[in-house]
Length: 202
Length: 342
Image (tube, rainbow over all chains, first blue to last red; front, top):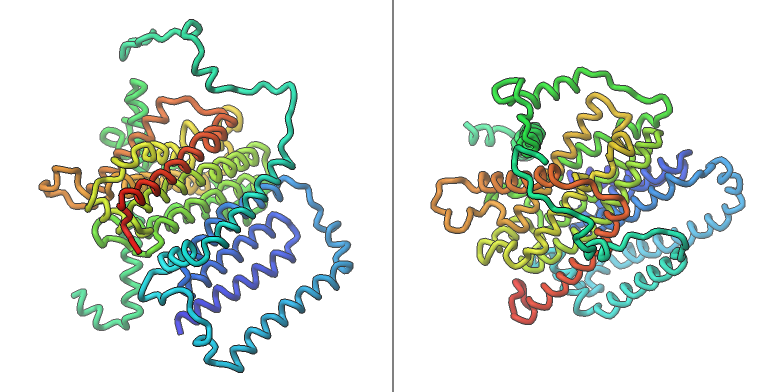
């Protein structure tokens, strides 16, 4: 009963903050609501016993991605009223995506309703929680059975990173750059080291 | 008496009461420690600069933190007219709250921990990565150039140094074979303190900790010379005090994490196990040692320039900690030292 109450709390706050993300007037407030939604999703993961995923969700999405997102949104001069003007134009596309997602969700839940023992049909890839903790179980399966997929996803991120650097990096002329090695290797003639006695000063 | 009470109340309520009492038992000493950390800071820096430091309020100036707190408490809370009120008020609260909740997983002694969760390291890492929100929100909500620049700097700085902190933590927990902080300390009891095999990482962690808590020489978010006081320039009274408390509680947390990951947590110094000192006191002594280094650094080093700070984080610390992680994994595998096999 207690768990159910907490579930409804997390779920309702997640949905409410999701609504606030798209309805709030200030883009920075939108991002802050988005962060709240992430948080509650992490809470839902915790309730499922997926502690590792919950923590990683907070670290990666809230701690890094959303910070950079907030960083950018704060510096942009966005006029939300102007942005909203084309809203109706995109409505059919948005509605189509929504319908597709809804159908997929219904198909999944439908499967549950028609075959209640569907859990037994899916071969559990990880051991149950009483045998190994969540993190251990995940580590054992990711780095053995799925190691190629894991590496491939890393490569996708690498390509994205190289692409970003390539797109944004440009050589600028006339910029004075500090070369730390040169400074450290500078001859001692330009600097004088003095031994100062305590309490005396120079 | 306690057993009687436990029998009378419904178990759910009794558990709640126990947890609340435990929380108070952690938070209250923490706040006192924060107050006296500010006092220690002024005394230590005073001694380094051949001054006396606070010595007027109470014996040896010991009541100075109380006087400072009272002063901030009775001041007027000013809300700038162009500020975004909810975010403006919320930011210091978030900073303070996050600085406190991370202590839930810190083990003070064998079994002395509020929440003994399996992902303790990740939890602390998650909470400390959230600390940036208090600062960036206050910088934005103040609607002031100085505060905004301070907030932006801080966001970039904290995100950068978190990456190397993460790698350092991974090196340590590969050696310990667990994400649970108590298990990490116990693993050090069975082998050596991790400062021995991971000595370079200890220093890297300390320096990254300085950057993560916005301490000198990395206190660019509040560089008073260029940004007046950075992100908290528009804050006064209790709102400012919450930022202040949060910052110092975060410093203490960094000290506790350094002690647990590298200095053996509640374990006594090697050879001194016969002393009748409880484990919690050993941990506190170690935290004091790390805090002294923090204060010492502040009194000794000039502030980094912003581009130097970024260079250090991304071009020195990140490759080095990544290299060390690969080295650790390699050594552990090659010499068959992995704690969890199979």
